[in-house]
Amino acid sequence: MSSSATRAAGSEPPKPADRSDAEPGPDVATDASTDVATDVATDASTEEKTAPTVTPARRWAERLTRPALAVASGVLLYLSFPPRPLWWLALPALALLGFCLYGRRARAGFGLGVLHGLGFLLPLLVWTGEGVGPVPWLALVALESVLIGLTTLGVSLVSRLPGWPLWGAAVWIAGEALRARAPFGGFSWGKLAFGQPDGVFLPLAALGGTPLLSFAVALCGFGLYEAVRVGADTRRATAVLLAATAVAAPLAAALAARPLVTDAAEDGTVVAAVIQGNVPRAGFDFNAQRRQVLDNHANRTIQLAEDVKAGRVPKPDFVVWPENSSDIDPYAEQDAYEVIDNAVKTIGVPVAIGSVLAPETGPLRNTMILWDPVKGPVDTYDKRKIQPFGERIPMRSFVRLFSSDVDRVRRDFGPGKEPGVFAMAGSGVGMVTCYEAAFDDAVRSTVRAGAQVIAVPSNNATFGRTEMTYQQLAMDRVRAVEHSRTVLVPVTSGVSAVIRPDGTIVQQTKMFTADALVAEIPLRSGETPATRFGPLVEYLLLAVAAAGLGWSSARRIARRSRALAE
Image (cartoon, rainbow, N blue to C red; front, side, top):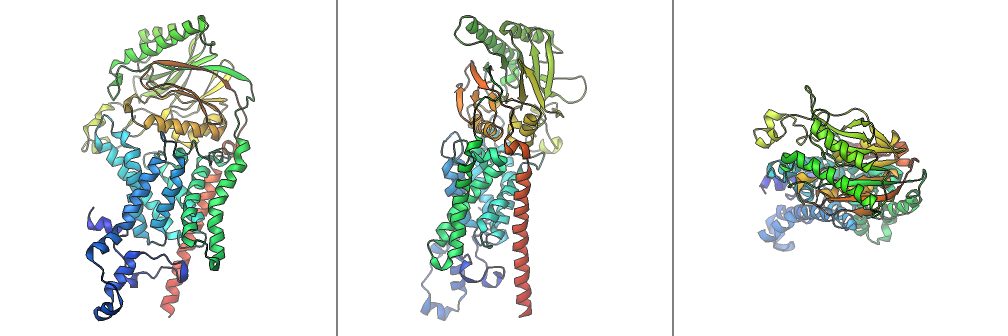
């Protein structure tokens, strides 16, 4: 790490004269490195009489403590994410981050946040370099870590306010909102909410969506540090009460929201099937044998029909194939059309097919096709959230300077415009294709359009046996609770799953194994508060963040004015 980076992370102590924005009194955040710097700056003769000798090794150790702990907090947060069921590690991770940020200046807050982001995202997103090398992975992690640094800059500023965990948690949500929208349409991976499918806070997703769920985790984590900091000091009763409230309130709210989590069948039940046909090989070359991928899914569907005929499984009312299960355009290739049509006719029920459509002009389309056993293709849904640097290449000529792998995407995909809800055997099955599950608005708009069941057809074969598929499955579980819908997850290579509206996985496949899941699932049409009110909770939390930052700014201006007046 360069010396400039270390200074930005807050390891070089500010001079006493630079701390004009520090809070007076017992709430001032001090650190060992500041104390050491002050001692070193003391007159040498006085230091010899009153201050202990500070060795260079000890001085460097004290200076590097917070940067090291910021990285550790990021690693701890990563460990709280699936496939590990260690959701509770998010709380000490954020408490440790709160220790690093408390009372720090803006520059230090930014640097410490970048280090936290690196510790968190380098292992979390390592799958983005699968098959294409480290450049895309490192570039994405660097960009997202800078955005986390901007977030923690804000947290450090509001940490001087009374009841700072509330303001800090709201600023954290502002950072997540920014990362979900920019740049290039945003990247929502790594939201605190997506690490909580097994956590006690999960019911809050039904109340206020992923923003409220993330807020509860951040508030409780920051509150945990604040409780340790103020301890049982009865002289600071207000601070102790606020810290205790920051820890207890999210837990109490989650308990109160539990009645919102249900898997009762409001509109009866149906039998649904998801097909995992498997792929010839993992990696970016999996679709080099596109016809084999199509045949795999058609053959597994035909085998399902044979199992139904033999009485081994109940007959499904409808079937969902994964994204890219037919990368051959069936509208343009008669052979592909016949393979699909034969499989659908054999099973005898509507099937949703994942395909790539290649019009003569314009962008490609990542499309789900509703295929009727009698009428053939009757409806389509075009994926609306197109993955940057995966399905489209922004700034292609510039990015090519760093990696020629951008040319693997020879023709960009274009986004659809409307949510897709297929009428399948009298049920409204909403299509949320793969990457779209990470975005609040994409899922909510599908449910609001009439989806009684959510289907998340995905293709994770590109990312091999990495944790990516489990991270996405965790998102799907959170979405199930958020909107109180069964979520069907057909994946080309796994892990495919059936998720009940309460977030529990009732069936799932192994990776890179052809399989079919058949389950009776509840149909639901009611709306949770999260579905009904959508981004309102996020907007309220953004207002709280703005108020906290504004209050912090006003206090600094007032202090400087008083200093000038004196």
